[in-house]
Length: 74
Image (tube, rainbow, N blue to C red; front, side):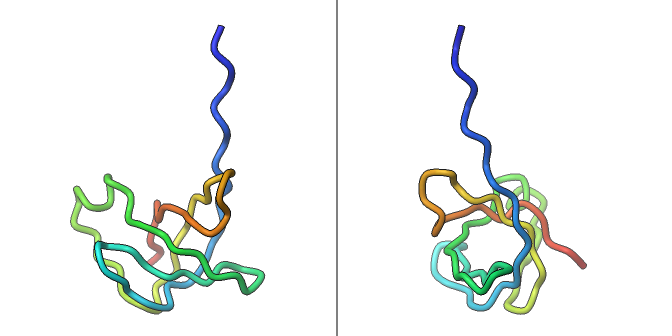
């Protein structure tokens, strides 16, 4: 039997800066800044993200400074 995969932490935040290679600096609740890349499903559907957008970020349980943007609120 395989052991369960580590669960990603989901938090909400606001995009503060666009970086190279579809990465963004996101300020999550609590005031911390994380570097997040766009999830493949969002790239596939050409969902654009600009600074100021509210987004949902999955944080890696191993490195809490990196994450993946999985949802953009309107």
